[in-house]
Image (cartoon, rainbow, N blue to C red; front, side, top):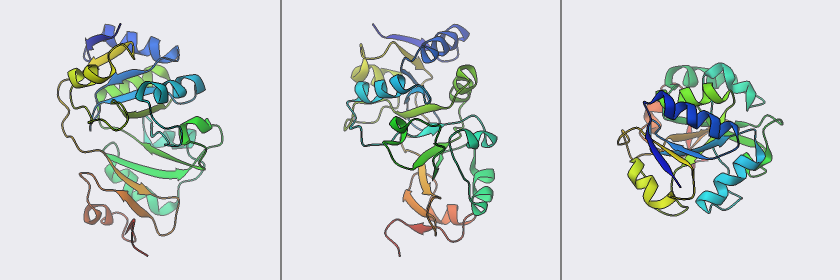
Length: 214
């Protein structure tokens, strides 16, 4: 049975923390669309995300961290040119691709040598990362190939009985996903444009190129 509880409730956050620490998968609001998350360092929990979503195992999962100083937990190296971008736009709807820390389970990155990571600008996400004490592997809270949910009710319509808990934080502020910048290559590339456009990102990363450039 899936519980739907107010995200602002301390009891709901406490339950979410317990479930995540036990290797369960939980849905919650983010600063973009609703997310489905698990402890990024618990292999079984990460596999559960793929099972719940019916997601192909060769599609990597993004990772949420609490703050920029936690990058070393999941990334092996951050290029110097990246810091102005990260300091200006984190927390926020920017995901960056970096060389993976070998300690991060391969299940998260689908065996790739890079990891997609961001600091979300949402109190519930940040509270959960803090409470669990580990970065969270997070993806949209929908069945693979189905519409991306912007309410807890939309999550329940797809994932009810598949997960134990949905935290209801009201409607999402946007239906756009985060913008994704690949910082593991030179020059860096914009893999996906969300609210943050190429021109906006170039203010902090002048040599940023579109995916199809070069």
